[in-house]
Amino acid sequence: MNKRFLKVIAAMLCLLSLTLAFAGCNEQAPVSSEPGEIISTPATEATLPPVLTEEPTFVDFKEYNLDENAEVKNIILMIGDGMGENIIENAEIVKGDKLAMRAMPNKCYVTTDSLSGTTDSAAASTAISCGVKTYNQYIGVDENKQEVETMVEFAQSKGMKTGLVATQIIPHATPAGMVAHTDYRGLYNEILKQMIKTKVDVLYGGGSEYTETTKMLKRIDDAGYTYIKTADELYNNELSTPVLGAFSWGGMYAGRLPSLTDMTASALELLDNEEGFFLMVEESYIDITEADLDMEGTIKEMKSFDECIDYTLNWAQEHPGTLVIVTADHETGGVIVPEDKKPENVNNDCFTSGGEHTSTNVPLFAAGAKASELFSEDLIDNTDIAKIMRKALG
Ligand SMILES: [Zn+2]
Image 1 (cartoon, rainbow, N blue to C red):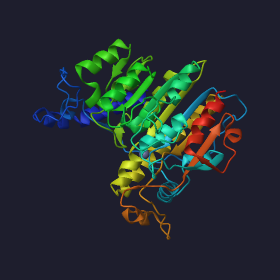
Image 2: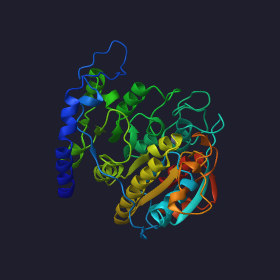
Image 3: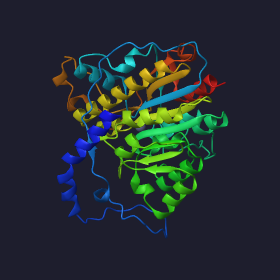
C-alpha cells in the first residue's frame, strides 16, 4: 500500500502540468443521459482527476500450488475479451517465456458461436453467464427475449457475494451479461441501473460518463453504495461493500491506473467471506486493440492480463476453495503466429480478419478447487461454462 501511495503521489506531481493544460480547456464532451435528466456534475474527461499511468510489464513465469481437493467456495472467472490461442502464443514470443495462465494445470477449448453465427461479446457473455445460446446484442435473455438467470443472480441465491471488474465501462457487454437483462447491449444507462438494483457488491471499471448524472448518482447513493472515482481512493480508502468505482470517463487502456490488477486486488479483499463469492474480471481491451490492428497495443493488454492472472493465482493459492477460470469470449483478429517466432515478427501482419471477431475455438485454463474434475473434457461449449460453474457450487 505504501508503495502504491508513493506511486500515486509521484504520478500526480508528474501530471500537474497536464492538469494545468486541461484547466484551460472548456470543450464539452457529449453526455449520454436519460430523457429529461439534469446533469449535476459538468462531467467531461477534462474535469476528471488527472490520469495516472504505469507501463504494464510481463511477470516472471512460475508454478503455483493451488489446492484441488477443497469444495468450491469462490469462483474467479477471468475473461480476456477477444483472446484466442494465437495471441497468447504471440505474447509469449514477445515475453520470451510462458504466460502465467500456462501454469494452470487444466486446459480445454471452447466453442463460441451464437445464434447469429460468429458471436459478439453480449451473446458470448450471456452464454457463459446464463448457459443459453442467444442472438448477438442480447444480454441475459434467450432467443425469445425471455430473461434467464445470470451468474450474479445464481451466486446471490446461494448467499455469495458478487463482483464485476473490467477495464471497459462498467455496463459494457461482458460485465453486463453477468447480471443484466436486455435485448440491446447499448442501453448502458438501463444496464447500469439493473447492476445497481441487483446490488452487485463490487463494480469496478470505467464509465463515469454514465455514473455522473443526478439520477444515477442518487440511485448509487440510495442503494447504499460507496462511490469512488480515482485510483487514489481505491488504494487508500477503508472501503466496504457495496462499492462502485468508475475510474475514467470511458474505458481504460492498459497502463492507466488503477490497473486491472489493482481493481482485482481490491475486489478480492472486499469479497472474501465465509459464504464465498463470484468475481468476474475482464481484460476488455485485448479485443479493442486487435480490432484496431494494433499488435503493440494488444501485447500491452496481454501484459496487463498476465500480471492480473499471476496476482489472482497467488491469492487463490492462499485461499483454498477458490476455483480460477481463465478464458475468452471469442477470438478477434484472426491472429496468426509468425513462422519465424521472433518478437519483431509479432506485428500487425499477424492480423488476418480485418479486425473482425472469428469463430475460432478459444482456450480455457482452470486451476484450484475441483478444477480437474469440473474441466475433464477437451472441448466444451461456452454455455457449458455456466453449467460447470453452477455444478461447482452445488
Ligand atoms: Zn468480446
